[in-house]
Image (cartoon, rainbow, N blue to C red; front, side, top):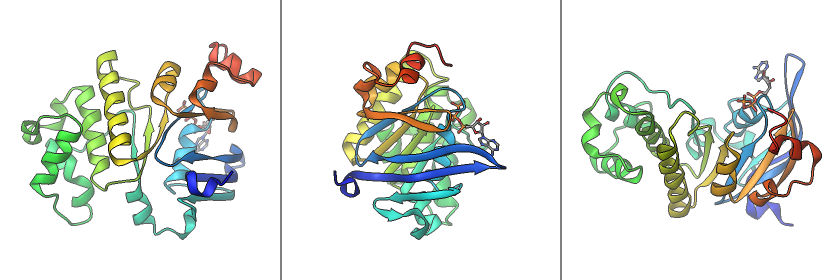
Length: 243
Ligand SMILES: Nc1ncnc2c1ncn2[C@@H]1O[C@H](COP(=O)(O)OP(=O)(O)OP(=O)(O)O)[C@@H](O)[C@H]1O
């Protein structure tokens, strides 16, 4: 298998330890370019830690990570953070208007986001442009999450890391966000890696899945593996016997 051509991110024997505690253990695997891969596993499995390595917030203790075939250390940090966007569970906002929050990635670079681009991004995520002048604290949970995704898209990342972005939302907003992420994936061919605790969501939105437990990548493949896991630990996790 030629993994280089297909891999947006590739891990080769990656270990990650903090203060002698082994958090990620010998991770080898890759995330398919242009596809949606979900990352599932019990609490504390190491999913968020893996994300921190993907955008170089942290470095592995040993092993190699490649982004589009190039070692992660060969990227300029700023370039890497633009290519690899991240959206978080609680969609953290700065004080002030929706516009101020949307423009933030460019403001931080001393640049201005053109009005047309603001309107386009609001439209992509399905937010009315009238909301731009509202205070971000007045948005609903679903709207905040859409704004957080729009803000991530400002830098046109080709890889998007999503950490539990729907877990605090009601069912309708959750489905709305799922639709939006599928749209972004199809329209821009963005590679999506999505941490979720919702196995049904992993089955419906993901093309592929990684199951992590206790710092290890236990099973990976097409999402359907969640219906027919091979590994006994994964079987127990799916039955809800491991939280
Ligand atoms: N900086 C750190 N110092 C010490 N321990 C850490 C640090 N970061 C993570 N850990 C530990 O590493 C393990 C994996 O944490 P991580 O947050 O990556 O798991 P997770 O799968 O994302 O969990 P959850 O689903 O609950 O968010 C946990 O036991 C956590 O306590």
